[in-house]
Image (cartoon, rainbow, N blue to C red; front, side, top):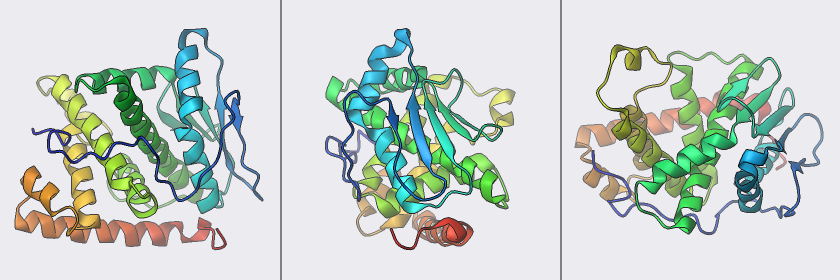
Length: 266
């Protein structure tokens, strides 16, 4: 499976092209955006073993930007806490309305990307993109829970799709961020080894499927701009048409499902 980065597709996230910008104080441990009603906040746990990771995440600000985006875009039914440095995860725990992301996950992600022989600055950018995609993925689970959304098929696939749609529709460099997250799926697939029965029992699609589904979403979001990506990926003409149709359906369906919580004055 050809790496998306070897195609020269990635746009490095050295400067984040968000639609909203905030400044995060270097010593902050909680990002709490002032907004009416319920909102999402983030808490950085103290953990001597991962103090460097905590500092990197705060300095990078990628999760804080994601929190700000969510608060600016959605009026949540219940408040959500992002627990950076949680013991388990990444996951959404409906019992406590929390998105849990361990510091160890950041380390695992960085180690995966290190296989690409990227320098430390690139590693930080790649890991940040994966963290943002993960945050939006878990937000998908949270919204399914809060709104009791009907999901036909794997909820994990639906959460992946929402993460891709949010990045591609709202972020200036959303395609680059989603592409970097796809690369993580590819790396995980390559490291897995031979498939066994348990791989087919999982809640997620196979890593290779998540990789190609994300590339399909990227192409479908702008087929003219990403024609070369489709060609290098090997998508047939029929598959390209399906990608365009599938992506537009994802956008329409998520807009319909989330209409009750979209803010209209943001």
